[in-house]
Every structure is written in C-alpha cells, then in structure tokens.
Amino acid sequence: MATPSPVTPETPFEPSKPPVIEGFSPSVYSNPEGFKEKFLRKTRENPMVPIGCLGTAAALSYGLYCFHRGHSQRSQLMMRTRIAAQGFTVAAILLGLAASAMKSRP
Image 1 (cartoon, rainbow, N blue to C red):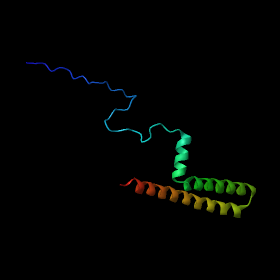
Image 2 (image 1 turned 135 degrees about the vertical axis):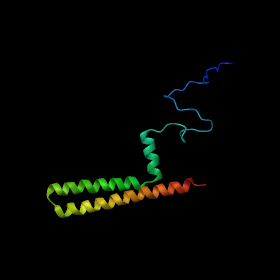
Image 3 (image 1 turned 45 degrees about the vertical axis):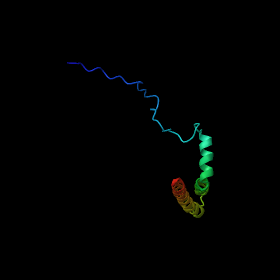
Image 4 (image 1 turned 120 degrees about the horizontal axis):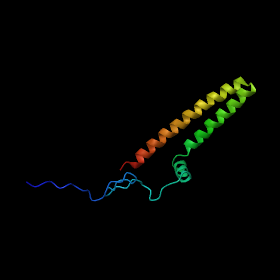
C-alpha cells in the first residue's frame, strides 16, 4: 500500500501580498493615486458635489454666526438653506452615480 505524499503548493501563501489571479488587476489605474489626485479626478467627474458641500458648510457657518449674534430669524433661514444645500448635494451624488453607471454599460 502506497502512502500519500504531502501536497506542497508551488508558492507559499503570503497574507501581506494580494493573490495573483491571471487576467485580473486589482486596480484600474496603473499607478496608485494620492488623496489630491483622487480628489481632483472626482471633482472633474462630478463638480456639483463639492459645490453643494461648500454651500452646506457656508450656510451652516453663517447660520451659527447669526445664532450667536442673536439674529434668530436669519439663523432659521440659514438652517433651512443648509437643508436645501444638503438635499442638492445628495441629489448631485445620486445623479453622478447614475451617470457613471450608465457610462460603464456596454
């Protein structure tokens, strides 16, 4: 009766490195992007999102300033403006996702 020989893999598994799969690359881009490059690329793809974020931050800041100064009417108006700017930002994100999904279809 023959004893089975232990199976040894060709290359040992290293958890620090991603597995090599033929025909698959984990990144679409040839070089890794830094934060600045990725931010600029995403801003060029959908410029309405940063505009909405800036509008939200501006309305919030000015509304808090007015609240601190005691102008309650203007503070309430700015908080409502902030909600509208947040809605604009969410809509811009969703429209950007839909546009990129439509663009990636064959």
